[in-house]
Length: 554
Image (cartoon, rainbow, N blue to C red; front, side, top):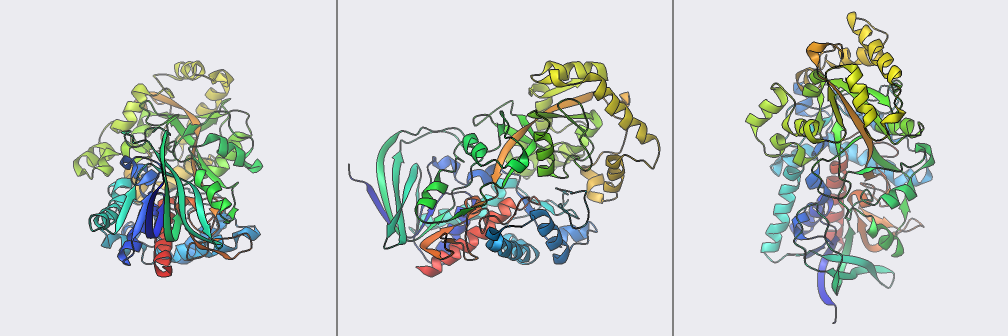
């Protein structure tokens, strides 16, 4: 059977947020667009649809209302101190970082507001650092939650693309898996690949890979926006850097299985350069989903700063590796312990105030824009319903009335035999003794008191410091934590127009890249570490650049 053929001004491979933004820009410029993706159309929006929708802004109205004094200079200090750029390959990522900071300080918020995107009024404080002023971390709260979470962020761009489809300017081709980019005279002029069997799989669920045909698409410009590698554990381990220790033998997965990295090799075969493959972003607060959608489905706890963090043997993590402070610093420390898991120990009072689960489906109040549910879940008595569901059903939660029983429950879980019961007791009781005074040598307790000076933390994010073993704050809770795969920080090297670059530094004619496939811009705009709220933001920024540049070139 001959291949199905299509033509377009702009071909976009991957319909996640970066692809939808690029498509909306190309359509707005009057171009004909074809979008292909290997999944059924139920997955339109890709990984961004599942996200919490966190966005990084600088000196926003939301920050100013809470008395936060932010500036471009402070954000630049934080970004570059966190990124740690130190390679020749960081030339374009450095330029992307500076351009993104200008965007986050300038038109990013107004551009989104014009599209109907709103924001939760309380600004969160992610990646708090805890080192010196020039070290990694956010000096101030900058994490703005999209009202509607990931689906709310995807919606305006999906609507623009579907409007273009209704007017005959956009063709969306689900179940089209690209296996090669077409080269004509050294330029990329489209793509070819397999048509997969129709699938009725719901969003995020695995779909078949049965091949029923082939296709060829000719285009004036091709944009690769196919995402990263987080669903492919073999590729994660292959690229795992020695500086983070040995890769875990067991991990949970924070993205659907289709986030497999397959287009990266295809793009490299067409002449593009991949850089910073060893830079990646995986979380250390992963828990097994009691109601999974994709294989090994894990959920990340977005922790407030009060839980006591113990390694698998019961030793408390060192300063400043507290919950929410330094994701990759904590990952590197834990990989050196010889175990794949660690523990939070906390009280009912802490879980009610501080635990949020990442993902649109785990936050029905914010995702559904339900103010009444929001007030109940964030300010009412008891844990939020999704958190309570994990307490009731999750394999990683232990809830007991006293410390002896809690430790016994921890030791009963797989791997729990590594736990030293006396060490756990020593750590928790020692921490509790430090609560009696308004001053302390315990850096985490001092930080808790400092955090509550920020109104947003005091309102919904940081529990009042208290003895974890106080029966009035109970019951006691332990959570077994796993490494959760998530983001690639490296990818296809691009210039500021999102043009894919060859190993010699020259653009590959006709080829562009955006989103996670491009390291969220340039092949690694975050460097070694990220400040959070910068992943979907990077999709927005690089997708916009790619769509505008590709449209202008054809």
